[in-house]
Image (cartoon, rainbow, N blue to C red; front, side, top):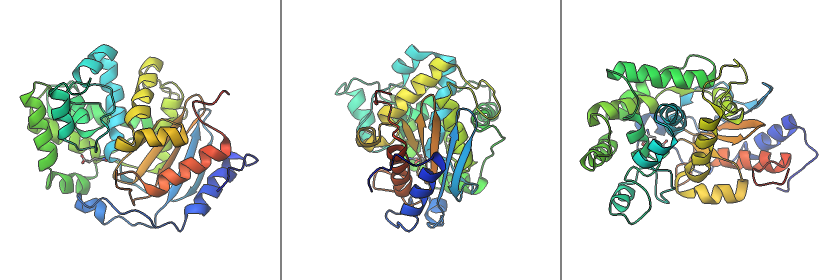
Amino acid sequence: PQPNHTLTTQEAVNRAYNNYKSTTDGSNASYIPYLEKANKRLYGIVIVTIDGKIFKAGDSDYSFPVESISKVFTLAHVLKIQGAKNLQNKIGVNATGLPFNSALAIELNNDKLTGSPPPGNPLVNAGAIATASLVEGKSLEEKWNTVIKTASAFAGRPLSLNKDVYDSEMSDNQHNLAIAILLKSYNYLYADSIETIDLYTRECSYDITAKDLAVMGATLANGGNNPLTHQNVIDEETSMRVLAVMATAGLYNTSGEWLYNVGLPAKSGVGGGIVAVVPGKMAIAVYSSPLDPAGNSVRGQLAIQSIAHDLGINIFKKN
Ligand code: GLN
Protein backbone atom coordinates (compact mmCIF):
# COMPACT_ATOMS: atom_id res chain seq x y z
CA PRO A 1 0.00 0.00 0.00
CA GLN A 2 1.03 3.62 -0.59
CA PRO A 3 2.35 5.46 2.49
CA ASN A 4 -0.21 7.67 4.19
CA HIS A 5 1.69 10.58 5.75
CA THR A 6 -1.41 12.07 7.39
CA LEU A 7 -1.66 9.30 10.01
CA THR A 8 -0.92 9.70 13.71
CA THR A 9 1.40 7.13 15.31
CA GLN A 10 -1.54 5.14 16.72
CA GLU A 11 -3.31 5.22 13.35
CA ALA A 12 -0.15 3.96 11.60
CA VAL A 13 0.02 1.09 14.10
CA ASN A 14 -3.66 0.27 13.53
CA ARG A 15 -3.23 0.40 9.77
CA ALA A 16 -0.27 -2.00 9.83
CA TYR A 17 -2.17 -4.28 12.20
CA ASN A 18 -5.31 -4.38 10.05
CA ASN A 19 -3.51 -4.64 6.71
CA TYR A 20 -1.60 -7.78 7.71
CA LYS A 21 -3.99 -9.32 10.23
CA SER A 22 -4.98 -12.07 7.81
CA THR A 23 -1.55 -12.59 6.19
CA THR A 24 -0.57 -16.24 6.58
CA ASP A 25 2.73 -16.36 4.64
CA GLY A 26 5.79 -17.95 6.19
CA SER A 27 6.22 -20.90 8.54
CA ASN A 28 7.21 -21.44 12.17
CA ALA A 29 10.83 -22.37 12.90
CA SER A 30 10.80 -26.16 12.60
CA TYR A 31 14.22 -27.05 14.00
CA ILE A 32 13.25 -26.12 17.56
CA PRO A 33 10.27 -28.31 18.58
CA TYR A 34 8.82 -25.68 20.97
CA LEU A 35 8.75 -22.99 18.29
CA GLU A 36 7.12 -25.21 15.70
CA LYS A 37 4.01 -25.40 17.91
CA ALA A 38 3.56 -21.60 18.22
CA ASN A 39 0.10 -20.19 17.47
CA LYS A 40 0.50 -18.59 14.04
CA ARG A 41 -2.51 -16.34 14.48
CA LEU A 42 -1.00 -14.32 17.35
CA TYR A 43 0.07 -10.89 16.15
CA GLY A 44 1.06 -7.86 18.20
CA ILE A 45 2.61 -4.48 17.46
CA VAL A 46 4.01 -2.03 20.04
CA ILE A 47 5.78 1.31 19.67
CA VAL A 48 7.56 2.89 22.64
CA THR A 49 8.93 6.41 22.20
CA ILE A 50 11.95 7.87 23.97
CA ASP A 51 9.61 9.99 26.09
CA GLY A 52 7.83 6.86 27.27
CA LYS A 53 4.64 6.94 25.19
CA ILE A 54 3.21 3.56 24.21
CA PHE A 55 1.13 2.75 21.11
CA LYS A 56 -0.09 -0.81 20.54
CA ALA A 57 -2.37 -3.18 18.66
CA GLY A 58 -3.15 -6.90 18.95
CA ASP A 59 -1.32 -9.41 21.15
CA SER A 60 1.12 -6.98 22.72
CA ASP A 61 1.36 -8.83 26.07
CA TYR A 62 1.81 -12.38 24.81
CA SER A 63 5.11 -13.96 25.97
CA PHE A 64 7.31 -15.59 23.35
CA PRO A 65 10.95 -16.77 23.26
CA VAL A 66 13.45 -13.99 22.55
CA GLU A 67 15.80 -16.26 20.55
CA SER A 68 18.33 -14.31 18.45
CA ILE A 69 17.12 -10.90 19.57
CA SER A 70 18.90 -11.61 22.87
CA LYS A 71 22.18 -11.36 20.96
CA VAL A 72 21.74 -7.58 20.91
CA PHE A 73 21.62 -7.21 24.69
CA THR A 74 24.47 -9.60 25.44
CA LEU A 75 26.47 -7.72 22.81
CA ALA A 76 25.69 -4.45 24.60
CA HIS A 77 27.08 -5.85 27.86
CA VAL A 78 30.19 -7.43 26.32
CA LEU A 79 30.92 -4.32 24.26
CA LYS A 80 30.74 -2.30 27.48
CA ILE A 81 33.23 -4.54 29.32
CA GLN A 82 35.55 -5.36 26.39
CA GLY A 83 35.60 -2.04 24.53
CA ALA A 84 35.06 -1.39 20.84
CA LYS A 85 38.46 -2.47 19.53
CA ASN A 86 38.49 -5.81 21.34
CA LEU A 87 35.02 -6.64 20.09
CA GLN A 88 36.08 -5.90 16.53
CA ASN A 89 39.21 -8.08 16.82
CA LYS A 90 37.80 -10.97 18.87
CA ILE A 91 34.36 -11.29 17.24
CA GLY A 92 34.15 -9.07 14.13
CA VAL A 93 31.54 -6.58 12.94
CA ASN A 94 31.06 -7.29 9.23
CA ALA A 95 27.94 -8.92 7.81
CA THR A 96 28.52 -12.55 6.79
CA GLY A 97 26.00 -12.58 3.92
CA LEU A 98 25.26 -16.16 4.98
CA PRO A 99 22.53 -17.86 7.04
CA PHE A 100 22.56 -17.16 10.79
CA ASN A 101 23.87 -20.56 11.78
CA SER A 102 26.46 -20.90 9.02
CA ALA A 103 29.60 -22.92 9.78
CA LEU A 104 30.85 -22.02 6.29
CA ALA A 105 31.12 -18.39 7.37
CA ILE A 106 33.54 -19.43 10.13
CA GLU A 107 35.67 -21.28 7.60
CA LEU A 108 35.66 -18.43 5.07
CA ASN A 109 36.68 -15.98 7.79
CA ASN A 110 39.36 -18.30 9.14
CA ASP A 111 40.78 -18.85 5.65
CA LYS A 112 41.08 -15.05 5.31
CA LEU A 113 38.66 -15.00 2.38
CA THR A 114 36.83 -12.19 4.17
CA GLY A 115 37.99 -9.30 6.33
CA SER A 116 36.51 -10.78 9.53
CA PRO A 117 37.81 -12.93 12.38
CA PRO A 118 36.20 -16.42 12.50
CA PRO A 119 33.14 -15.58 14.69
CA GLY A 120 32.00 -13.01 12.07
CA ASN A 121 29.75 -10.67 14.02
CA PRO A 122 27.88 -10.79 17.34
CA LEU A 123 24.42 -11.14 15.75
CA VAL A 124 24.92 -14.48 13.98
CA ASN A 125 25.19 -17.72 15.96
CA ALA A 126 28.99 -18.12 15.74
CA GLY A 127 29.64 -14.54 16.79
CA ALA A 128 26.95 -14.61 19.48
CA ILE A 129 28.36 -17.83 20.93
CA ALA A 130 31.84 -16.24 21.00
CA THR A 131 30.29 -13.10 22.56
CA ALA A 132 28.60 -15.23 25.25
CA SER A 133 32.02 -16.76 26.00
CA LEU A 134 33.25 -13.26 26.91
CA VAL A 135 30.62 -12.72 29.61
CA GLU A 136 32.59 -12.45 32.85
CA GLY A 137 31.92 -14.62 35.90
CA LYS A 138 33.32 -17.49 37.95
CA SER A 139 30.47 -19.91 37.20
CA LEU A 140 27.78 -20.51 34.61
CA GLU A 141 25.18 -19.26 37.11
CA GLU A 142 27.08 -16.03 37.65
CA LYS A 143 27.38 -15.45 33.89
CA TRP A 144 23.72 -16.24 33.31
CA ASN A 145 22.78 -13.82 36.07
CA THR A 146 24.70 -11.07 34.25
CA VAL A 147 22.99 -11.87 30.94
CA ILE A 148 19.44 -11.95 32.33
CA LYS A 149 20.03 -8.89 34.51
CA THR A 150 21.21 -6.90 31.50
CA ALA A 151 18.22 -7.96 29.41
CA SER A 152 15.87 -7.17 32.31
CA ALA A 153 17.33 -3.67 32.68
CA PHE A 154 16.69 -3.08 28.97
CA ALA A 155 13.08 -4.31 29.39
CA GLY A 156 12.55 -2.45 32.65
CA ARG A 157 11.16 -5.52 34.42
CA PRO A 158 12.54 -8.90 35.55
CA LEU A 159 12.67 -11.35 32.64
CA SER A 160 13.07 -15.07 33.19
CA LEU A 161 14.03 -18.31 31.54
CA ASN A 162 11.33 -20.35 29.80
CA LYS A 163 12.43 -23.82 30.92
CA ASP A 164 10.42 -25.58 28.19
CA VAL A 165 12.16 -23.60 25.44
CA TYR A 166 15.55 -24.18 27.04
CA ASP A 167 14.95 -27.94 27.33
CA SER A 168 13.63 -28.07 23.78
CA GLU A 169 16.74 -26.35 22.39
CA MET A 170 19.19 -28.24 24.59
CA SER A 171 17.69 -31.53 23.36
CA ASP A 172 18.64 -30.67 19.78
CA ASN A 173 21.69 -28.47 20.04
CA GLN A 174 24.37 -30.33 18.08
CA HIS A 175 24.80 -27.69 15.41
CA ASN A 176 25.48 -24.84 17.84
CA LEU A 177 27.79 -27.10 19.85
CA ALA A 178 29.69 -27.89 16.66
CA ILE A 179 30.03 -24.15 16.01
CA ALA A 180 31.41 -23.62 19.53
CA ILE A 181 33.94 -26.43 19.16
CA LEU A 182 35.02 -25.20 15.72
CA LEU A 183 35.56 -21.69 17.13
CA LYS A 184 37.49 -23.17 20.05
CA SER A 185 39.75 -25.03 17.61
CA TYR A 186 40.65 -21.67 16.03
CA ASN A 187 41.16 -20.01 19.47
CA TYR A 188 38.15 -17.74 18.99
CA LEU A 189 36.03 -19.13 21.84
CA TYR A 190 37.01 -17.53 25.13
CA ALA A 191 35.56 -20.03 27.63
CA ASP A 192 34.65 -23.72 27.83
CA SER A 193 32.50 -24.82 24.84
CA ILE A 194 29.92 -26.87 26.75
CA GLU A 195 29.41 -24.17 29.35
CA THR A 196 29.21 -21.47 26.68
CA ILE A 197 26.55 -23.35 24.71
CA ASP A 198 24.52 -23.74 27.87
CA LEU A 199 24.79 -19.98 28.50
CA TYR A 200 23.99 -19.16 24.86
CA THR A 201 20.95 -21.48 24.90
CA ARG A 202 19.65 -19.90 28.13
CA GLU A 203 20.15 -16.51 26.54
CA CYS A 204 17.93 -17.55 23.60
CA SER A 205 15.29 -19.02 25.93
CA TYR A 206 14.03 -16.14 28.04
CA ASP A 207 10.53 -14.91 27.32
CA ILE A 208 9.56 -11.40 26.29
CA THR A 209 6.41 -9.69 25.05
CA ALA A 210 6.16 -7.29 22.11
CA LYS A 211 5.82 -4.55 24.73
CA ASP A 212 9.09 -5.62 26.42
CA LEU A 213 10.79 -5.71 23.06
CA ALA A 214 9.65 -2.19 22.22
CA VAL A 215 10.98 -0.92 25.58
CA MET A 216 14.29 -2.71 24.98
CA GLY A 217 14.57 -1.12 21.53
CA ALA A 218 13.50 2.29 22.82
CA THR A 219 16.36 2.10 25.36
CA LEU A 220 18.74 1.86 22.40
CA ALA A 221 16.86 4.65 20.59
CA ASN A 222 17.40 6.72 23.74
CA GLY A 223 21.20 6.29 23.89
CA GLY A 224 21.08 3.45 26.45
CA ASN A 225 18.66 5.11 28.89
CA ASN A 226 15.45 3.17 29.51
CA PRO A 227 12.59 5.62 28.78
CA LEU A 228 10.24 3.97 31.29
CA THR A 229 12.55 3.35 34.27
CA HIS A 230 15.05 6.12 33.38
CA GLN A 231 17.91 3.74 34.24
CA ASN A 232 21.14 4.24 32.28
CA VAL A 233 21.52 0.67 31.10
CA ILE A 234 24.52 1.33 28.83
CA ASP A 235 26.38 4.43 27.71
CA GLU A 236 25.51 6.24 24.51
CA GLU A 237 28.63 5.21 22.58
CA THR A 238 27.96 1.52 23.28
CA SER A 239 24.36 2.02 22.22
CA MET A 240 25.43 3.61 18.91
CA ARG A 241 27.79 0.75 18.13
CA VAL A 242 25.12 -1.86 18.93
CA LEU A 243 22.78 -0.09 16.49
CA ALA A 244 25.50 -0.08 13.83
CA VAL A 245 25.88 -3.85 14.09
CA MET A 246 22.07 -4.23 13.97
CA ALA A 247 21.99 -2.18 10.77
CA THR A 248 24.60 -4.36 9.07
CA ALA A 249 23.64 -7.80 10.40
CA GLY A 250 20.34 -7.72 12.33
CA LEU A 251 18.34 -9.67 9.76
CA TYR A 252 21.12 -12.13 8.84
CA ASN A 253 21.57 -12.63 5.11
CA THR A 254 18.74 -10.25 4.21
CA SER A 255 20.10 -7.36 6.32
CA GLY A 256 21.10 -5.37 3.23
CA GLU A 257 17.69 -5.70 1.60
CA TRP A 258 16.03 -4.69 4.85
CA LEU A 259 18.18 -1.58 5.26
CA TYR A 260 17.65 -0.69 1.60
CA ASN A 261 13.87 -0.99 1.84
CA VAL A 262 13.19 0.23 5.38
CA GLY A 263 16.26 2.20 6.43
CA LEU A 264 16.22 1.24 10.12
CA PRO A 265 18.54 -0.88 12.29
CA ALA A 266 16.60 -3.94 13.41
CA LYS A 267 16.92 -7.39 14.94
CA SER A 268 14.82 -10.49 14.48
CA GLY A 269 14.66 -13.87 16.20
CA VAL A 270 13.30 -17.26 15.11
CA GLY A 271 10.76 -17.01 17.95
CA GLY A 272 8.89 -14.51 15.72
CA GLY A 273 9.93 -11.25 17.39
CA ILE A 274 11.45 -8.32 15.52
CA VAL A 275 12.37 -4.83 16.66
CA ALA A 276 13.41 -1.78 14.64
CA VAL A 277 15.03 1.24 16.26
CA VAL A 278 14.59 4.86 15.21
CA PRO A 279 17.50 6.63 16.98
CA GLY A 280 16.36 9.62 19.00
CA LYS A 281 12.68 8.75 18.47
CA MET A 282 11.27 5.28 19.18
CA ALA A 283 11.34 1.53 18.68
CA ILE A 284 8.78 -0.52 16.79
CA ALA A 285 8.38 -4.16 17.92
CA VAL A 286 6.24 -6.91 16.42
CA TYR A 287 5.45 -10.50 17.35
CA SER A 288 4.19 -12.98 14.75
CA SER A 289 5.73 -16.47 14.55
CA PRO A 290 5.71 -17.37 10.81
CA LEU A 291 9.16 -16.72 9.31
CA ASP A 292 10.63 -16.12 5.87
CA PRO A 293 13.40 -18.45 4.62
CA ALA A 294 16.12 -16.32 6.30
CA GLY A 295 14.37 -16.67 9.70
CA ASN A 296 12.69 -13.25 9.99
CA SER A 297 9.02 -12.75 10.98
CA VAL A 298 7.03 -12.16 7.77
CA ARG A 299 4.28 -10.01 9.30
CA GLY A 300 6.84 -8.34 11.56
CA GLN A 301 8.76 -7.04 8.57
CA LEU A 302 5.59 -5.98 6.72
CA ALA A 303 4.17 -4.14 9.72
CA ILE A 304 7.39 -2.28 10.54
CA GLN A 305 7.87 -1.29 6.92
CA SER A 306 4.29 -0.01 6.72
CA ILE A 307 4.62 2.04 9.93
CA ALA A 308 8.03 3.45 8.95
CA HIS A 309 6.73 4.48 5.53
CA ASP A 310 3.54 6.03 6.93
CA LEU A 311 5.45 7.98 9.60
CA GLY A 312 8.20 8.92 7.12
CA ILE A 313 11.00 7.54 9.29
CA ASN A 314 14.32 6.34 7.85
CA ILE A 315 17.82 6.95 9.30
CA PHE A 316 19.06 8.09 5.88
CA LYS A 317 16.40 10.79 5.53
CA LYS A 318 17.53 14.42 5.56
CA ASN A 319 15.28 15.26 8.54
N1 GLN B 1 18.40 -20.33 19.51
C1 GLN B 1 18.42 -20.16 18.09
C2 GLN B 1 19.63 -20.85 17.51
O1 GLN B 1 20.66 -20.75 18.07
C3 GLN B 1 18.41 -18.70 17.74
C4 GLN B 1 18.50 -18.44 16.27
C5 GLN B 1 17.72 -17.26 15.78
O2 GLN B 1 16.82 -16.72 16.39
N2 GLN B 1 18.03 -16.90 14.55
O3 GLN B 1 19.58 -21.52 16.51
